Image 1 (cartoon, rainbow, N blue to C red):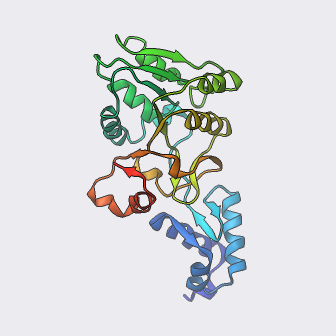
Image 2: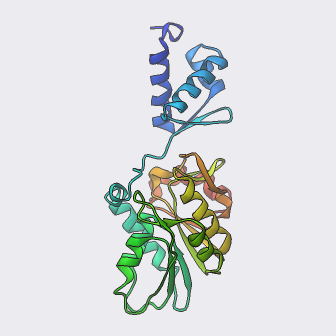
Length: 255
């Protein structure tokens, strides 16, 4: 079957297959590959973006993050990868620090692995993080109250934002929903983006936490450029060097 004889549904499935394989597409190469005009590809991408099947970008499209929205679903997703990230994060902590923990499941993994002798202050809007640390003998917890999200089990709103604005933390542990070298760090929840944006602005060092399936994906609500990260902790091995190469080339310390 020639590419020109493909139906719209067949053509769009090929586009989705390509994004699934390589993480992105550009309209010009798709136009040549499928023997249709760039206007046709543009309409296809817009239609699929409206259906939530991909994320449209300037000149092409990239994949959405595969991560579930609800905290309970995310909690069970890629547990081993988050454990690897949590153990890497521990090396960045020392006594006396003030550390922001956002509402992600990767930060929860860090909280669950904190050594009992570590003496730090944790500022968080995450109920699960606060719950895990309530019995820690040496960690002081400051909870940023506000309106509870029943999807994320975290708080948001003016009170939460003010708590973060009044804190000058040594480190912010930023759980990442989606990260892309040009699109930046994004998430699916508007209020979550606002809270994380505030945390990024007030901390001295920003340490991103992302399993590899979040790399080269994007969502609707923007938090910050990837260059705001001082470090990105992943579950990468030497086999994944190419996947994180663009981020390293931007000067980010990827571990």
